[in-house]
Every structure is written in structure tokens, then in C-alpha cells.
Amino acid sequence: MSEATDPSTSPAAPRWSKAKRWAPTLLGLAFAGAGFGALGIASSGMTITVAPPEEPSSEPDPLAVLKDDVGVLQSTVDELAKGLESNLGTLANQLDERAAERAAGLEAQLGKARATLKSLAARQRRLESDHRKLLAALADVRRELGRRSEATSPGPIARAEPEPAAEPEPAAEPEPTAEPEPAAEPEPAAEPEPAPTPKPRRGLFAFKLGGGLDFDQLLRFQVVPSLSRVGFDAKSTLHDFSGVTSKVKGEVVMRLGAADEGSRAEVRAAAASLRTGVEGRDEEMAKRFEVEKYPDIVFVLARFETTRLDRQAKVLEGKAHGRFRIHGVEREVTVPVHLEVDKSRRLVVKGEAPLKMSDFGIEPPTVAGGAISVEDEVKIWLSLRLRSLGKVAQ
Image 1 (cartoon, rainbow, N blue to C red):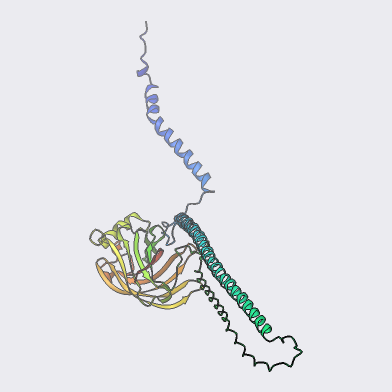
Image 2 (image 1 turned 135 degrees about the vertical axis):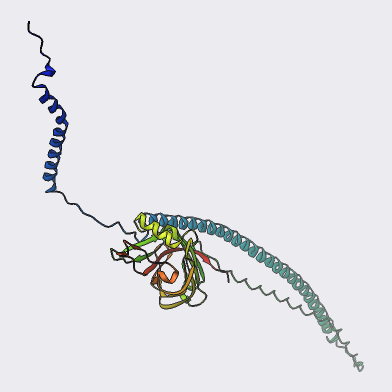
């Protein structure tokens, strides 16, 4: 009998083993070829664009502006409601005052009418008394006239020669009748009291909504951080870039119509919050600013110089003379600024000025042995929106 043949020892066994070892490699190459083929087909309609990182904007977020506008509108509505409530109360008080004044006037007139009636009654009594006296005097006169008439009438004629008549005795003079007492003069009527001058009355809607910016009043303003930006623009051998932060706080005290007198301001920005759009660059900048040691960038206004004032447009332009403190170093600067009042009665302040980093002890950064460097001079700028806190007590 012939012996069974072992397949593993057959001549085809080595070829099969090699095929199994190379199969994964060949399969991978096949997939790679298919991928490159698909990529070649798609490359005809594909465009690859390399763009620099998006630069931060100096303008506030429109959503934040809208949110603040809604807040201003809400405060205006609340103020209007308070004003209406106050004026309705004033109206009620005025009505009460008018009713009380009218009642008091009527009471005074009634008192005067009573006094007049009393005076007329007394006058009537005096007239009646005078009338009775006149009637009595008239009766006495009539009686006296009767007696005189009887005494002077002739006697009867005697036939004998009459004796000479005795001379008649002179008639007794009538007793003087009592003269009627002169009627008492009427008491002068009391002069009417002058009517009180009416107080000026305030109309129902005679009030102003607060928050209006009066250019002739010394006002205090507060920075609205969500709508404010402080930043810088820098140039380098590679490309220009900007840094910006909205972590800003501060106050401004100013009479917009006469800003040259008594103006003061202080604005602070957190140095560690400056962002340029590149994380590594932000970290390097924070190191050079030594933000742990010098956390704030500060501007303090010393005086303001007005160059243009338009009250109708509510615009003020001028130069802000003050001091910048960066990296713990202070330098005097002059910043041209533009101020205006927006539709929500906020004060908008914008300004910019060139500064050198080396003036504040900051070494401009370099990369790749100086092949990429940042210029020493940068432009620092402010874009602030401030809300009025009202008048400043003087």
C-alpha cells in the first residue's frame, strides 16, 4: 500500500503560506490606491484656504447692546410708572386742596353776607326810629299852628261905641320843637379781602423722565463693561494683530457743556484678560505684562481740552490729558477722544493714542531668533459706553 501524503509537505504548501503572509499588505495597498484615486477625483472641486485667526472686534456684541437697550427701556418704563403714580397723587392732592379752598371761600362769603344782613337790619331799625320821631315832630307843629290861628281870629262887633281895645298880649312864642336827630350815617361796608393769589399748579403730565443728559449739569457716568472695550493694535514682521478685553470698569465726572473745568475720570482694564485670538501669544503677552504683579492697565484723566462742541447733535470732541499706568510704570499721554450721546442716553467715548512698549518696561516679543518680531510702538484704544448716575452734588 502506498503511504498517505501530508499536504504540508506538498510542493504547493510553501506558495500558499507566502500568499497568506502578503494578503494583508496587498489589501492595504488596494485600499490606499482607491483612496488616492478618490482624492484625485475630489481635488478638482476642492479649495483649501489658510486664513489668519479672527481678530477681536472693538465693537460691542450686538446682543449685549440689545440687552442693555432693553434694560434701559425697562428702567424708563419703571420711571414713567413712578412718575404717573406721583402725578396721580399730586392730582388727588390738588383736587382736595381746590375743594378745601372753595369751601373756605364759600364760608367766607357766607360770613360776609351774614354781617351785611345784620348791618342792614340795624340800619332799618334806626330808620324806623327816625321816622317815628319825624311824625311826632310834625304833630307838634300842627298843634302849635292851630293855637296861633285861634289867638289871632277877630271878636264880635258891639253897637255901643267900643272901648278902646286893650292891646293884645304878644303871642307866646311857640316852644321850639325838638329837632329830629340826624340819621346815623351807615357804617361803611367792610372792604372785601383780596382774593389769594392762586398757586401755580403742575399739570398731570408735567414731569421729566430721568436719565436725560443735560450738558450744563455736572454728571457722573459709570462704564458698562458688557458694552465697553479696551485694546491695542500691534504690527509684526509676520502679520498685524490686535488685543482686546471687555473687563473694564471706571467712572467719568464731567459737565459736557463745559468739559474744560472740573472733569475727572479713571478707567481700568484687566491686563490678564487681553485676548489676541492666539492662545500661545496670549500666554506670552501675559508673561511680559507680569499680570500677577501688575493686574490693571489704568488711565487717569488730569484735564480735558475741548476742540468741538455741538449741543444739538450732542457731540463733544477734545483731548484727554492724563496718565497711563501699564506694567507698573506711569507715563503722561494725550488721547484725542470723541464723545456722543446715543439713542439710549448712554455716553459713548472713543479714543486712541500711540504708545511704546519699551516706555513701560515691556520688551517687544521676538520669535525664531528675531526672524519674527513685534514693533515697539502700538496703538492703544478705548471704546466705552457709560450710563449716567445722575447729578453730582456740589
